[in-house]
Image (tube, rainbow, N blue to C red; front, side):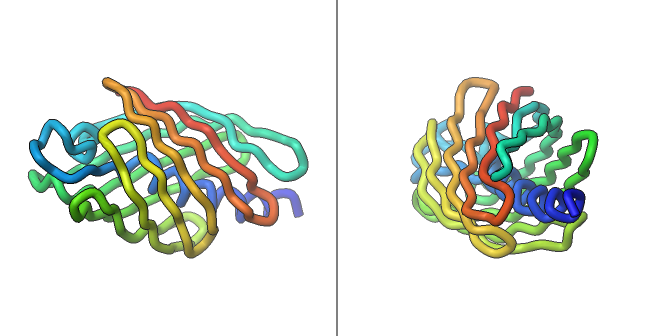
Length: 165
């Protein structure tokens, strides 16, 4: 039963991580002002997932972000794992004058949904829906970013991950 709850929790966690890590945009005045451009490339990181029973688990993640030369689009693939679960996330996102929208999917647990939000060059505030409902904050620094997710899911309560190149 714990493994089923954990699988469902990681499905939501995976979606939240994928979207949060990759959906930063602003009104594009110059490519250097657009976080999609700054996020393009390969990232790795670690963090902690929190559950409603008070337990937490460590995570290790790798992220691959592409914009195919278009600073208003971002494609991503994120893989996270720990001792009890593995996740594979994909998302395609679009920036429209500082508003972010897109779709996500988690392939291991067959979940999907949408994301919408706003961003500045250094911070995003996003809402996710579909396999889970929740909120995300992404803080973007030079060569790094961190993701904080809060969820009202039945067993998954949140996550914090730090990524760097």
